[in-house]
Image (cartoon, rainbow over all chains, first blue to last red; front, top):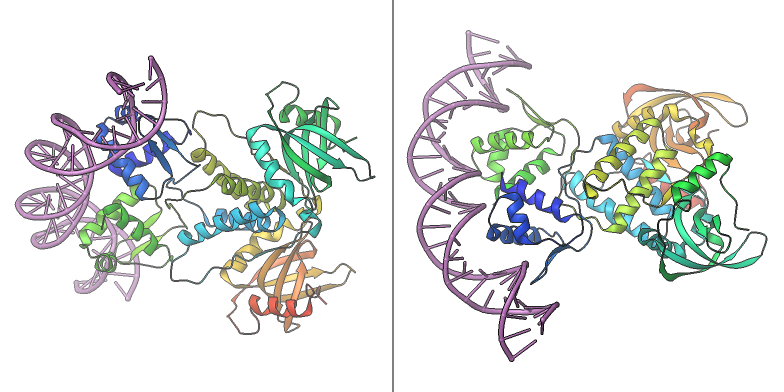
Length: 233
Length: 233
DNA sequence: AAGCCAACTGACAATTACTGGCAGTTGAAT
DNA sequence: ATTCAACTGCCAGTAATTGTCAGTTGGCTT
């Protein structure tokens, strides 16, 4: 096996986010442990965020991918359009991520002497989408980690309520963002407009994968009703 | 210079889409021509779509990137959100590109044993955006290659007209797509709603970069007027 | 505090991979 | 028919990679 192939394999192995011992990897790739140590050196030198701790093992610090990947021209266009939209329609954290992703890709996908390419897309979503952005990072984080949220909500007709919810999915409707959840108070699925959420904090507990309360169950239920679910009541 | 660095450099050189001779590349990277031939072998074996033609030179078949790239978790989220939106709000060609890009990334960015990950985003744009999709591939292609378009247009108040336009940029407004152009008939900038374009064909000629008729000039003009430009008149 | 674990480091020889040079062959274009 | 430049095979010299060995270091457990 070629060295460069082995380096890619190491990344693939480490990508599960769990702890790995140099000895195990060495065994699996049929090289000596010393070689693995040297490989981790090389990877670190290339900027891959791998932490090695003495007495413990190796672990990936954050998600990574560096596959030999061929993108067609159309895929590049789809990517740029998508990033343009996200840069307009999402919260600042995602906006920054979209911008930095675009920079990274442009760095490698265009000849370095050339001027920044114009991809022929402009995006002008409605301003309303920006209301409620301040809660989006918290919400996305809660969805990722399956953490309950404690929210205060002011519905469109002016009633206030306080809920503990299991955030399942954020939806983008072109103008507004909504959040589909399992609501503990109502013991049912509820969708909230994110711009109507007045306060939003982690409740400090995770939620489990309970059949009947999963995103999949919600989508099936909504499909059955041919609607998009109720606003919070 | 390490071999792997040289391989990346070759990709970077070839990435301008033009023709390159092995001799020139060899000279530039200070290795022998023989080595360059061997490198192209290696690249081809890794799946990079480079064509070599005897007596002609080397050329990239389609855009490519295989950078050592680290994406943060947030960047991955931005990417998935963007692709979800494109998969809903764009024409079938871009939709397919978005889907295939998502597949490629999920293949490498998630542990290979795990089930497909749910990213917590849903996207439901208005159906109107889908009108006029049939012209989008032609239009995107024309923007890319700076080709004039011959269009038939039916404005919102029912008047028909036929124009030769220089397509500069497509804009997404959350519900509809518009196309900003230089219009030869009006000798001025004009924006057209893409869903109101009844026929759309390449005019068979390219347009040049004429100062005063570029996208950049249009954007400056629009900024100055604090509006979004006229609909076609 | 002692012991264990596994990451690390340095040195050296053996092995392997890469490279340049040369002498060809091949396919396409002129 | 000639030219051009991609391609191929071979060989010897060179450079990079590897395994072995003998340590050191920092964190954790007992």
